[in-house]
Each structure stands twice: as structure tokens, then as C-alpha cells.
Image (cartoon, rainbow, N blue to C red; front, side, top):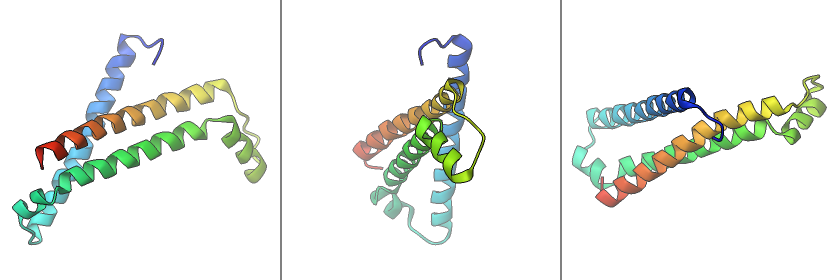
Length: 124
């Protein structure tokens, strides 16, 4: 995150807000679907389903971030060259690009983890 200007921070904040809004939209639709098919809303809340969903989403975001960061590494590029007989070579620019994208997912995962902890403390 070193060397980011104000426009980069604004873009990162917008991406994080959109990603979090999408996650909570998915959670809301899932809860609505479960209620419409006959589950009791109070029972879903007391089972802490929202907290468990947020924790699952945290794990998925961490996994995506790790995969994206690894895909730009030297070992991933060399493996791709050997296995797929690719002529695409590793470069530091590719690594930096992949790490910037991975940082977005890791920040999303950290935010979702904090929200998950808060939700579990509240008891939702």
C-alpha cells in the first residue's frame, strides 16, 4: 500500500464498499429465501447464521487473495511454463499487479472478519 496517492485510496475504498455491499446483499437474499421456504426468522437469528455466513465469506476472501497473490509469484509462473509449455515469462510488474489485486481481497477479508466478530458478540 506504499506509494498510493489519493485517487488510489478512493478507488480502493469504492471497491471495498461495493464488495461489502454485494456480500451483504447475498446474505440478505439468503436469509429472505430461508424465511420464505418456511424457516422461522427468530430461529435463524438465534442459530447465529449471519455470523457463520460472514466467517465463511472471510475464509473465501482470504483464499481468493492468497490464490491471486500466489498466481503472480515466480514459482507459479515457472510451474505454468513447465506444465502448460507456456512462453509467458515472470515479471516484477505482473507480481506487483497480482499483489495489488490480492491486497483488495485481503482487506475485504479483514473487514468481514471484524464484522463477523462483532456480529457474534452481539448475538445475531
